Length: 343
Image (cartoon, rainbow, N blue to C red):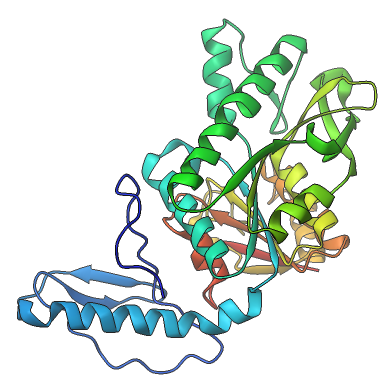
């Protein structure tokens, strides 16, 4: 049973959405005492004002927690012991509130028996440091142009700063995290990308050695991985974090790959959030790319999803990291959030 007391007052208490499972039972209506009552939405619980008696509040809140935990059981059973690789970046890294939400979700998933692996980017932090040093950030087709000077900044920011900050936050939230990069334990070896003449030291993943990650997840640790690696000659490369997450998911035989982004998911009509594609297969993704509906920075995301699925990952999802607790919504509800890609 989850403790009622928040072990870390600096992070907001986790408030799970109303969970919907394959064996979902009807819940009796709940009337929350003042100042709370409930209005049920299509996939969440909305809290509004009420004037009920305050005396019943502890009992009703306790009943609510029990109902939520009971409804989560089918999802916990489905994913317990399974590896979930999460790529973390975008707005979810920039907002303190969203950052705490992601960290709490990871810790909760670990506590109920899942094996989360976090792969992170750090684009805004890299851009800030480059600007501070008088280096102008450049991108081509959503990929960072990385000369020698930029490569040093990327390594310094991702490995030395962002990675350690995330490890610290997870530890504060009650789990134990271990910070790594592709350089550690030969986790993944890089090779030059096909567009090295334009992009510089932007590499691809040539080989993955997942044994160190398996050892950590077997022991209940949460690996936190910066997407920096080197080739066999020792040259460092900037690896796109989406690509690194996809290759690690495939090597680990992950149940699910989840990419946190700054958009709702794959859109049928560009710039129209109402056209969100909830589920699509590989053929459908390729068709949308050919039609130009998937373009720009979304291309490397869908490519890494397709590649990971082709190598045995069960499902890959592109979800909106701007939505609080989007990880729990994706894993522990039938409807999910964002776009799920299947093989």
